[in-house]
Every structure is written in C-alpha cells, then in structure tokens.
Image (cartoon, rainbow, N blue to C red; front, side, top):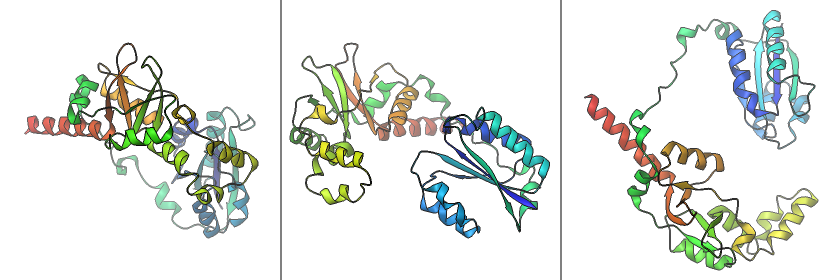
Length: 290
C-alpha cells in the first residue's frame, strides 16, 4: 500500500536541507505547498480524499508543507528519519509536524520512481560573469534618479507630495535634523496609513482579533513620517550590485537610497535599473562570444 508522507515545516530555513536529503535517498515526486492556511491546500486534500485533514491548515503561519506518495516501506522509514534529523527532532518546539496517511489506491507512482537523474534538466547556469566588477555607481548611471527625501516630523501629506514629484521613486528616505538617514517609507505602507480613513471598510473586513483592531486604531492616529517609517537600509556608491540586490531582496524593497560615509542621502537606485545593468552585461557577453 502507498503512503502519503506529509511534513508541515515551521522552520523554513530547514527546507533546502530537507529537499536535498530526500533527493539524495530517492524520495519521489515531492510536492511543495507554500501556504499552510491557503484554500488551495484544503482543496487539494479534498480531491485526494483527505478532506478531514483540513483542520491542520487553518492557520496563516509562514510554513511550508511537503507531500510525497511512497510505496516502499524501507524508503518511507528512511525519509522519516532524514526529515527528523534535518529539523533536529520533531519534538522540538516550532520544528513542525510529520505524519503518514495510508492511501488505498494510487496511480502513476512507478513512473516517478523510475525517473533517472539523467532525465532531469540540468541546473540553470549563472549568467553575467562580467557583473563581478559592477558597482552601485553603474546602476545610478542608468536613470540618474533623484532621491525622495523627507524629515521625520513631516506630515503624511508632505510625504505624498514628495513622492508625486519623484514618480520613479517607490521608497522615500527619512532623515533627521542633521540630514542623516534614519528610516524608509515604501509606497504601500504610505498608502495604507493615508487611505485607512478614506476606506476603513477595506481594513475592518479582514480583522479577526483584538490585536488587529488595536492596530487599526493606531493607524488612524498616524500623522508624521516617523510614525510609519521602517528601519533604514542603504547602499554606498562602491558597493557591488550583488550587495544592492541582496538588501532589496531581503527587505522586499523596490529601491534603495544611496548614502555617503556620513549617511547623507546622495542618490537612489531601483530594481528596474539593476535589471537593466544585468541585461546589458549579458548582451555584451553574448556579443563577445559570437
């Protein structure tokens, strides 16, 4: 009989190691669900005849769910052991849950297990070897964007006006009285803070507990840039473009201020410019190769 091996992984940092371990021992056809609380996960289980497990998918935590149909008892035990080792034991708090569900009938398992490593597509090769010497200065030269800068005590209306005059800038730099960078405001955060009093029903309809109501009340009293700014992030002219992308990717920002050694804002770069630099570098490499 085939068994459905299910791992709900709370520590998502363990995901690469778990996937690698299962691939090494030959666990077939691993399916990865990115949202434990998503409707898609519940629908998938219902179609599989496992709708009773829906209660496990009621939260909205940032978890990952891995599923694999296995018809080899030895392989199943190895997969369980590997998973338990990767997470340092499922009895550890916040490690996740592992369980096995018997499946009375499963079609197509053989073709999964018969897949040879040679049939798998080769991993994508990294592009843009010529990017190693590229710096933030190269990105700044693409559009030559002027940064949007406000002070910590500026009202939200002033922040909006500054962004309107810098239509290509999605992230505002917030500075203190000596013009030192102290925070950032992205356009989505600004929109939520400003529009909450215009469209309160959009926010109230998603509230399910007291903490969210308190957060709503707090947002209705936001008046200044300091009230909504997030921790500062920046790059310097000499930083590599790899570092610039790392900061934007890690902070989920569409752009970044460029600062000098005194953390005064001297420029702004965005993802579109970075992509342009990478694309042109790749085109140059291809032209040299022809």
